[in-house]
Image (cartoon, rainbow, N blue to C red; front, side, top):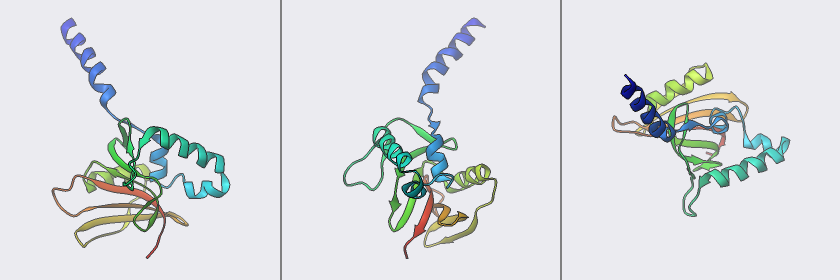
Length: 162
């Protein structure tokens, strides 16, 4: 009995720190509950603090549009691989690549929001869903429409240039 307890304790000391913890601010940004776009006008010191924190906790290579967490983080319990702090292509907002297929990410987002995502479609080899949250804030999910797809892009887009 003592050996089992000691083994479990040793296992938890080694394995548990390796698990990623949710980053509350990143989660709030991805779910459109916070917005750097709003901070530009209403809370410039909050925006500056967020930028400083981001430069400290995330790594960026000059040629990449994304940043990677220096230590593991998760979004709603799912590993975050990359973060796009201001845009993806022509979409302006805050998004992240999550290491999970589309359906589990969609279920986690819907549970966190307490609402179903609407405007879902499959086209051009992609799954996509969105939910307008407020003016200039839309939660969006996108992933390759393939059973082999292992990543989903989730984010809050403030506007999308067409």
